[in-house]
Every structure is written in structure tokens, then in C-alpha cells.
Length: 271
Image (cartoon, rainbow, N blue to C red; front, side, top):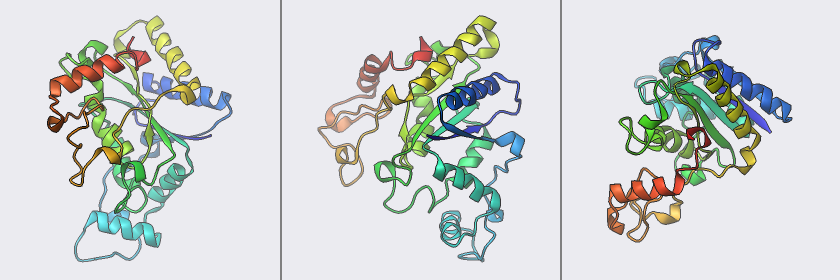
């Protein structure tokens, strides 16, 4: 299997760096081909803008980014850095995003990688999203670290359930472009735990990687569950953990409680 790891931490000796090292060693030991995009080391430019388009523009007088991305992809007009990363994604069977959670999301450098690399035409296009997305057949997973304890990311935690926090990434980036998304691996506040606990995280992560083929993916409703307005049909209770369906007589609280009951044991790193 071809694996792409996108690593987004400025310090190679960080715990994120240790997790990335475990991933490379374990996946290569299992016989996979591993490529790493170390964004800080690469000096990745996170800003999507006019400089992304080296060929003739679709409209030189007005910058419509989605139109220009689609035109650049069709005419081979992206810059060399974007094309290199797109080749890595295209070749990958599995994409692992490794990053610390900053402000309830990914670091800006990683979001900028998504903005520029997952361009219109390459990663999505008209009528090609979610289960018909361009990356259908590929799998993806997040490996994250947090600055606070797991209890803060429970359904009743002050930071909100982890599935809610990561929904913009899981659904809005990975699911949207067609990936099958595996549950995330989380190492909770590694800077504030013992060396033995940090080693336990590394061992647990290695075990997760050994069991990728046995790991059930996150649930996203299929197109057949939605009506022509792209809302869940009246008889379909939401099961994603983030959505709820008032037209099925379902409240947010009911949907969240049902999801928590079904999936409490789905994230081994939370135990």
C-alpha cells in the first residue's frame, strides 16, 4: 500500500514527531511504501492566491480561485510545489494527517496545504463530492495531539465531543472529497503526562496502524438518506454524531446521546 503522511509540527523532536516516526517505522515494517510531506521542513507556503497559477489564467482580470484552480488543473498550470503534492495524493492509497490540535482545528500550514493541494478539478468538481468524490477508494485518518485531557472532549466536556471538533476535517475535507475516513488516534496532552504514558501512546498508535484493515470507518450518511434539498429524509434519524434530524422527530440531544452510546468504545486511545 502507498501511504502519504502529511506532518504539520514545527519541532521534529516533539511528540508529534515521535508519532510520525512510529508511523514511518511501523508502516514500512509492514511492507508499505511511505512518503512524508514535512510541511514546516519544506517551508510550505500556506497562502492560496494568484501565485498558485503559473500558466495562462482563465480570467486575468478577476481572481475567482475555484475557477482558476479548475483551469490550472486542466491545463497543467499549477505551480511545481502544488503539482508535487498532488502527485503524492494521487499515488496514495492511505493518507495520514499528523498534527497538534490548535484552536480546535489543524495548524494553518496544514489548512493551507489542503487549500492549495485539494484544488477544484483535482480533489472535487461539479457532481463529484462525498461518496462520488474524486478520492473514492482511498482511506484517510488523523493522528492528533491535544493540550488538554480526554475528559474535555467527551460529549459533556467543556471543549465538546471530539467528533464535533473534528467534523469540519472529517466530513468537510476528507469525506467531501471521497475518502473513507477511519476514526482518529488521539494522544491526550502528551506534554503533561509521564514518560510511561507517552510510551503507551506510541505503543497504542503502532497497534492501531497494524490493524488498519480491521478498523471500521466513521459513519457518513449515503446519498440515499438525503432528499433533493440534500437534507436527511423525514424517516432517517441522524447517525453521524454531529447531525440531527428534526424531520425524524430527533433532537440534537437525542442524536448525541445515541451516538455516544454506540461509539463510546470506538476510539481506543480514549480509554
